[in-house]
Image 1: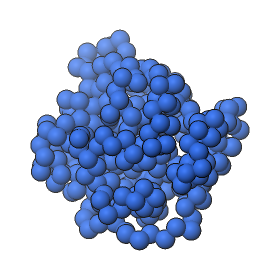
Image 2: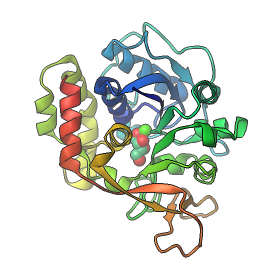
Image 3: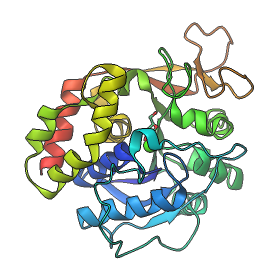
Length: 309
Ligand code: BDR
Ligand code: CA
């Protein structure tokens, strides 16, 4: 099984990504590191512990707290989308039996990658603060890690925070810049261009059935779907983070192309914008495998089948 660490700011779709990762049976999940993002670090950590408890996996998978703030910028939460607690209230009454493990997320990433050089895939579905801190501590991570998959950015489309910026990039663009420029031999970017097409709809939720996970998905996505339909005219929950998880074990659901990508950090209007050099105007070597297309039906089938198991 492929060794992975998930890095999350557990809101609605991160939670669905964790469910997909664990239920897939494809991964040896070495741990889940949490970070400030959609919700505070404390809330993201509690939410992550609850999701593992829902899966009965809390004893097997350690949750490790990471950074409680972006590298340089103030917090920017996303309660409008993910609800006050980040999970649309779905696990409000669940008591956390097993809290976070000892340690600090960025250190945990460094330690596990050094323990298993060349074997660990990092699946990042949150602002990139923890990975940036890990890189600052141990630059050799770049070559010791097997692969990095990031949900973040939008290369040919519009943002979901500002007109140009995707949330994970917007919250900590300095961290994103460190990651993009680090020189990872295998870094895949799963951006809004494609995740916006991976839409969970009522029929998929119905297909999950009346299981504890089916009921959880229905409850946690209810408000999200309502807000999504107000803005986008379609009742759906975009599977941003689950698609990044899916790419890590079923790459055939997406098309990728190598490009040079950087992120804006010094603009009043465009901070957090990912800039993809489609025509190689900057003459740089590609640093990223950019997802340019997704077979949304195939991914949704995989998602529903996996969560129904
Ligand atoms: C990303 O931002 C967060 O709100 C989601 O969890 C996802 O990681 C989508 O832009
Ligand atoms: Ca996320």
